[in-house]
Amino acid sequence: MDTVAALLGDAEKRLVGCSESPRLDAELLLAQALGKDRTWLFTWPEHVPADGECRLFGEWMRRRERGEPVAHLLGWREFHGHRFIVTADTLIPRPDTETLVEAALQRLPAAQSIAVADLGAGTGAVGISLGLARPDWRVLAADMSPAIVDLIERNCRALGAANVEPLLSSWLDAIDGPLDAIVSNPPYIADGDRHLSLGDVRFEPRSALVSGADGLDDIRQLVLQAAGKLAPAGWLMLEHGHDQGAAVRRLFAEAGYSAVETVPDLGGNERVTVGRKPV
Image (cartoon, rainbow, N blue to C red):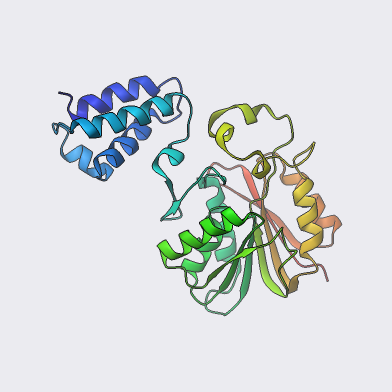
């Protein structure tokens, strides 16, 4: 009969070749199979799980070895201190995207009733995180897929984000201005990029990842479309690839945005470009 410690040790070895975080993956999957948190595993390493728990953990391990994302197996992912429901319909929220949330929190007035739109919201992680941090704000979390809008609604209910409104819209098509800020983590990977065949992105919707030959098609559209929906001096804030900062700043500048700058993520990579509405 395998103990928690033995199960984790074996699982970590099995995942070494197919995961960047084999020990963490094993702990998350075993904790969920047992209905416990990760801390419990460290407290009770000698515990022997029941047969049903071992079978569930074993099935998840086999799927993880085939590359299936941990977030899809668990059905959730932590982001900005909150647990978001995740499905295969959307991107999995990633730590780099917290840079977008922090950029908005630092630049927008905290205690004013302002209007913010999160476009291509996916799970709603960005917009809901903003709404939870700033209860006075009105946040629109928009996506073009009814199934994804339903997921945003589920996450709003689960997290108590009463000031976040899920909305069916292709970018800004169904949204009226003026908006004090527009934030988005749009698709920004170039068609044919080798990373599309690696890691978790193999299991994520291609439409949420790829944006033309250079990865900038959607960003170009947002830079132009946002100007007509922003309030005077309103902010546009877009996540992009680590090597796209210069190109995105150029798009902002060509469209007349002011105060343009790029914010690095925790790894020091250029990640979010911001600018204020053209005069």
